[in-house]
Amino acid sequence: MSNRKLTFDAAVVNKLASKVNNQKKLLLTFEDGVGAFSQHAMLHMQTQFTLNIVTINTPTEGYNTILDSNLGPVAVKDYSVEDLQLNMTLRLNTHQNTLQLTGEGGMIDDNVGFIDFTDPDGIKKNPSR
Image 1 (cartoon, one colour):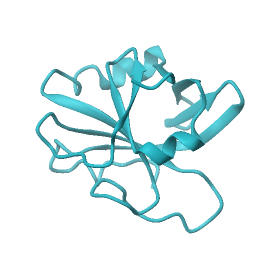
Image 2: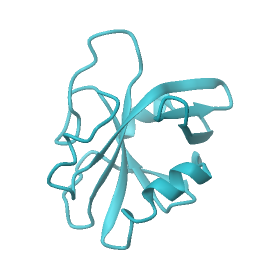
Image 3: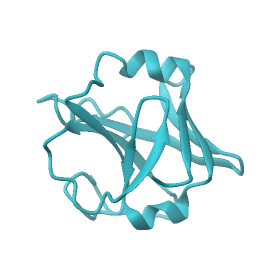
Image 4: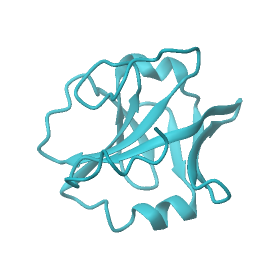
């Protein structure tokens, strides 16, 4: 376990409640083009993350750091911890229907992607990219 904590706000919990269960796990993917769940390499100076849902049996090599959260453990790539803060919140911006990752130091990513890899159309439904 990392000493970092991620809190999903009530709107995000409501949005994810039907998608998360004990047969699935959550990943917070740093979008750097490395690994099976990263959709692209960063082409600009903006930090980008995507929240992923995968089955419990899906290999997730490289996701060796665990964040504690109110939705259960969230795995991250070891080195992406450098871009995270100790206490973070993932909230729904209802005005733009986007996910925002913030910490005690301010905004980390104002447009976090969401991909449910357990859904055959999950990549197509990624609202932020």
